[in-house]
Picture 1 (spheres, rainbow, N blue to C red):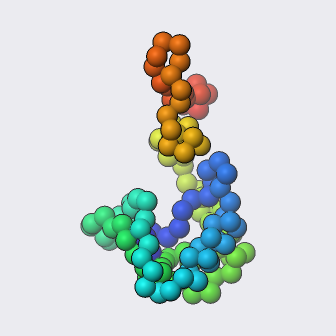
Picture 2: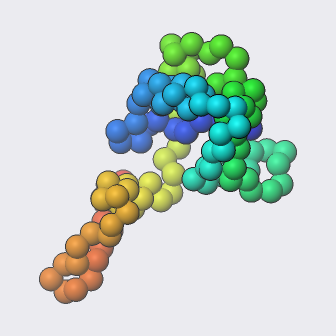
Length: 122
């Protein structure tokens, strides 16, 4: 959402430059193009969840991309910010499902499907 900014890029396969390029393609769409967000963290000062915005709203008020932020400025901001963030609690199980496009792992010989957490990550 515009008041929260842009997505992290420090997860496996993440790339701040690719995110910037993708954002620029979205911002090139007509102002009234509706954008539906995957999830919302309710930025400080906002009491309700939000899931829809527009290209115009993003262009005008997104805290990370409004104005004329260059690709280099955006990459430096995003990578610097990401370096300060902790690992989300559910990132390891989430990645295991996301890399399979939402499919759960195959069942093991006992018929149970497992998401596995490396012991040294705890």
